[in-house]
Length: 94
Image (tube, rainbow, N blue to C red):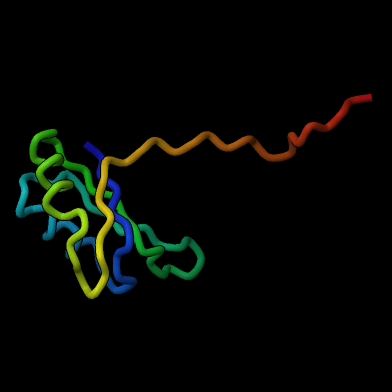
């Protein structure tokens, strides 16, 4: 299951995120999302856990907890909405 983790401290690293979830079971991956230009954390990340029951326990156990002085938002990740491809903004063809 893919899990969204929001309101992370900007200093949080991938390894710290993974460590928090390892207490609940196996972690396939843990990634703090960074700005592609500055490299600075965007304050959220994603964790992949292979076992659904462990992932649900992690969500329940970590949502609302304080880490690094910030209260985490933890829930099942939702698929990203499709973005319109560039250059097609209701242009008319005469």
